[in-house]
Length: 153
Image (cartoon, rainbow, N blue to C red):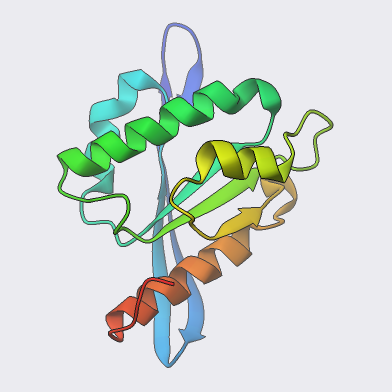
């Protein structure tokens, strides 16, 4: 679903149902939603996140996007709290996108700046599909492990 604002056209959210087969004996179907980070869509993000099983936080690896990443992560934490979740208890994966760009921050910088939760991490180049399925598969395994009575990791 695309929304047009005065300044730009933005993707409000993507919805993608995805059957990824059997993981640990469970037929696994993901219902994926992606949401934009702009502040004007804050209320919609909260609505979309209600009932979530896990979050893959996709950070832009470009050095000049670090401040926006930090703000977005703080907003995620606040929104989760408002709708009744604790970010330290929700399955969380950090995906560092755009790793192929020359201005990508070093992985150690991304970790130090964004991953205070010690969440599993994946490097990605989403435009080429690198790291995306790996992140989704890891999240599926975490959720299924929880359903089977295990820990989050």
